[in-house]
Image 1 (tube, rainbow, N blue to C red):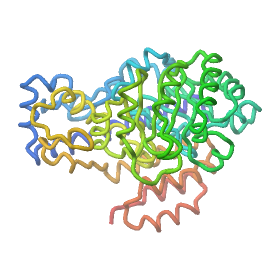
Image 2 (cartoon, one colour):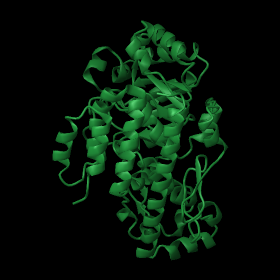
Image 3 (cartoon, helix red, strand yellow):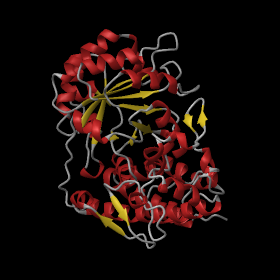
Image 4 (cartoon, rainbow, N blue to C red):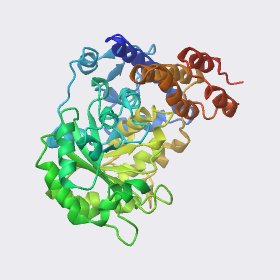
Length: 446
């Protein structure tokens, strides 16, 4: 493909994002009217808690946009105005610089993309960024593969300007190997992340990922060695502990803080739990209250309502979204929208009658049917989204591989469509872009 193809695709992505904003805002205004929330919001605005100028919610000529760093929607036609950051991205001049200070300042109440094996590729990260993710991560990369110059491993570390800031996540056991891999990769990365929580058996067998939580001394050796080797910020992703008899997230975070780690993400389950059982937000709240470095919370956060309650309850600096973003990358926008609308305005004003939930802080009951808010974009939008996502994959992977890779995304995007199973079977026989687009465009809601 031509060098400018990615820029053209990205411009199309911004237009699709603009279409989403229009649909979302139309729905939200109807929602406000249906549940008579305008009066509640006006009262809060009069009390000086909501800023109608910055939020644009009370102005009938305005629409609401959460990520002012990326876009600004100004009228009912939802016209898109790119600021200098977006323009620089299109001009390939955008190279953000992260350090410990900027991480702490910019991560507050942010939404971050999780590193997902087999999913968090360039296309996924570009779409996540466009829809509001502050920080992306590559999928987990073997430090041994990097150290021994494995070409397929190194391919996973490529990051385009359209998905930054982006960290590269690595895993391993030996401090020297991890440090050398981090040194090799840091030129491409905006930060280096070490996985210390993965529960996958083959990773545990290699004494990596979640296995490291059983050896705090090894964790300290790794962090000291890597931190002393690289110049870019260092972060870690952990779990609560190996099992509920061995909860040591706080101790690990204190070790990380002492070693100069700038950010820690905690998944609220133990390694032995895998992805089953309940997430324990109470333990993460405890960690956050006792460390100074930014803490990102992860685990079963699948809606704006859940993100708000978890952030308010734990007082963490942001949320990491993983599986909930599959096939619905617009979730980043929706969570940011409600963080800006409710959490930042109401966090210090719980005396206004908001009921307290014993498990997760406030529940916004003053806003009546807040829990009923569940926006789903139109089928036409999803079809346009899917076609463009596939075209991005073709750019990075080539046609045949991209069409095969898109099969899982097709299933996620059109999960609730009538005859979805039959459509998936048909799509799984396709190898050409033109045929794939034809199937997508033929989908109807009948």
